[in-house]
Each structure stands twice: as C-alpha cells, then as structure tokens.
Image 1 (cartoon, rainbow, N blue to C red):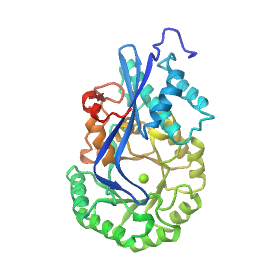
Image 2 (image 1 turned 60 degrees about the vertical axis):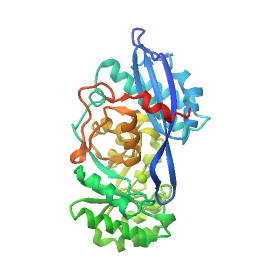
Image 3 (image 1 turned 180 degrees about the vertical axis):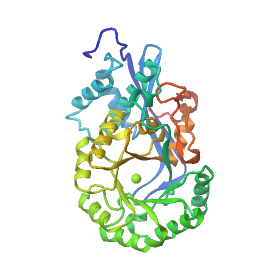
Image 4 (image 1 turned 135 degrees about the vertical axis):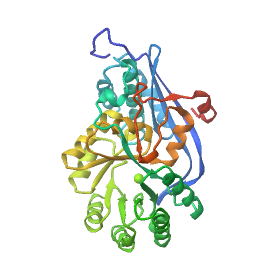
Length: 371
Ligand SMILES: [Mg+2]
C-alpha cells in the first residue's frame, strides 16, 4: 500500500494488452532483421480516468505486467509514481530487471505518469516542468533491407516535412558489406544536399578498426552521428572509435538502469548518451539518466517510441534530439489520436490535452491484438 494521503486517488486497476503489427516492408539493420513489431500497452485506471503507457517488446512482457507488476501497483496512490517505480524495481530483483522485465516496468511507469497528469488535468511536460516548447527530431529508418528506390522515397518524405537530420542503418550483415554501406550513405548525401545532417547507425555491426576505416572512407560525406559503431557492450571499443572519428559516437539504447549509463559515460565511450523510456525504467528513470549524462557534460538523445519521448524530451536541458523512427511512428499513428507532426524538424508536445495527449483508437488496434 502507498504511504500517501488517504484522500489521494488510487490506481484501481492495471490492464495490459499486446499487439503485433506487420511492418510495411521488410526491415533490418546491421545485425537484425524483422517483419513485425509488438507493442505491449498498459492501461492504468483511477475511477473514470485511464493512463496509457507502452513498450515495444515481445508479448511475454505483457505477462510480466499481468502476473508480477499489476498487483503491486494497484491500490497505491495514483500521485506517487516514484513510489510505484521503487516498488516494482524491488519486486523484480530475482526476476532480473534487465531485458523484458525492464520493458514491462517501463510501460507501467509511463502509464502511471500519464494517469497522474490526466488526474491533475496537466499536459505531461508541464507536470514535469518544461524547458522548451519544441523538441528537435531526426528522421530514422533507412533500413538495410530497403532498395535504392525505397530509401529515396523515405528520405524524400522526411525532406518534404522539413526534417533537417536523417539516419540510416549501416553495418550490413555484421559489417560484411561495407561497399553497400558506403553506397547508401553516398546516395543519401547526394539526394539530400549538403545542408541535411547525415546520421548512421551500425547497431554494433562493425569491429573497432573497421568502423574507423569506414568513417575514413566516408570523410567527404560529412557524417555527423555514428551510432553503435561497435557493440554497446564494448565500452573501450566505443572510446577507441570515438577518439578516431569526426562524427559524434552515440550509444545507450539498451540501458536498463543508472549504473549502465554511468559506466558508459565514465568510460568516455560516447559523445552523446542514448536512453529509451520504454526500456530504462520509464519516464522516472529516463529523467535520472538525463541527469547522469548532464553530470558528465553530455547531451541525451531519445531512442525510438517518439510519442513516449516528446513530452519528457521537452523537460531536460541537455536533450539533443528525439528519434522519429519509421516503424514506431507508423504504429503510433495507427493506434492513437493526438499524434504529433515533425514538420520543420521539431515536435511540439500538446498543451491542449492532459498527459501524453493521446487517445487510443481501440477498434483500430484490436485486429492486431495477440495478448
Ligand atoms: Mg540505434
């Protein structure tokens, strides 16, 4: 039970659903391919008010919410999100917070933040405290599975929206097709012109020296961002690449707790830290990760799930940008009313609706339900 004031609204129930949505074309990066994406959606209720939270995770994460987390959160004060997160983290000690369990915890934390903001009638960024009205985004996709025409089409879509930063996947086949990586980077640079910032993400597909050589060969393409050139577990390798190349080296999307982020920063492994609300422990822990990054003089970039990050991204002084990831943008636009426009290269969290400002279109989501 919550230690809170007896008059505070309580969390009456926590429900969870899983939806698997096929991709609109085969998708892949340097080290993985996929043809569908599963969203695990949490609905936290207090009286007539419902908060929404979600993560992109296998449907097994829904089982963790149902069996382990829901009961621990139900009955607590709906205002004390920090206490709920603390309870969940303690509860999963033996289950292991890293991985699926962390995804589940994150989705519940987000739902509780959305619920609290709705109960108080505040947009989430105002509840937390905004430092900016608009959040910079970058277009993200450029899958290794795309042919040249598909890549052009996606790039044109971002450029037409005025998004001045774009990211493609490289490191194809675990770094075994560098010529194609370079061709695709050149294709984007040629089509976008010199003003657009070119970002690349190898998803850990290269070896250390190989990653450095790739950037040497791409020197004329003015790459600004080199994400996971090597495995994000190889902190010394990230540091070695970072010291040798011009683009900013970034990693952190697999971080599940503050210790992970501190170690990455302490190792000098990144120019910009990454963290994901839907993995690291929700909005509560993402804000703390931002503080860890700030303590090392680093900015934070939000990984994927764009509508999970738009509000919280407006609240930290050291935000670099938010990833406008094709796959997740598509699903969030399919499922929710109130989604944001990245026109001009920024999103503006809504001021005219409480919480995350989203409404689930249940009937549109239902055909994809798997749990
Ligand atoms: Mg990435």
